[in-house]
Image (cartoon, rainbow, N blue to C red):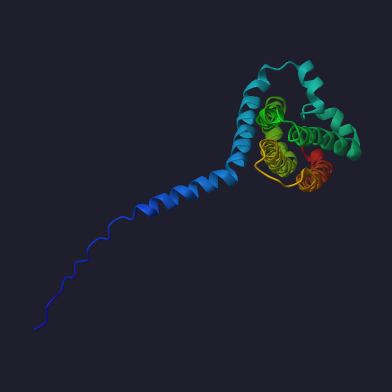
Length: 220
């Protein structure tokens, strides 16, 4: 005869340390990525607000903001590759420089989220303008020509703002005496990261220019 044997195992009691460990992991995650997530969120919020507000901006306002936003297509198309590169790089450089300088000010940390928001606002205004002016063709142009460079620079800007935030924390640690490391070491590391993000910004402008010259005439 054959029988069936049922085996019952007692459930192990939950270890309270496991919960605390996960809680500590979550705290470490926020410490490492929380500021990057904040700046990314502010950029996305700015993008949404820019899309909504683009319909309420007058043509004169859009023309005056063309240095920061992509809103004057005929002039940019007729300006050639050099003009397209300078327009894109100069605008991105201003945002990057603002983040870098704010990182060296004790009060500059308050402006960092607004830099991300304003950049997102410009991206949203450009998308809304292209949609309202050129319809579906404008959205295709935005997706295939403008968006790759925008994504590359947005990542560089978010990480630059994060680096500026850490620079602010180091200022606070130096003032309160919580660190004895020399300011020179902090500044050199900060400058190196800024130059790295500047190189990425330059690459984003080159990518934007190449796509602009290769594909823009297919849409306009």
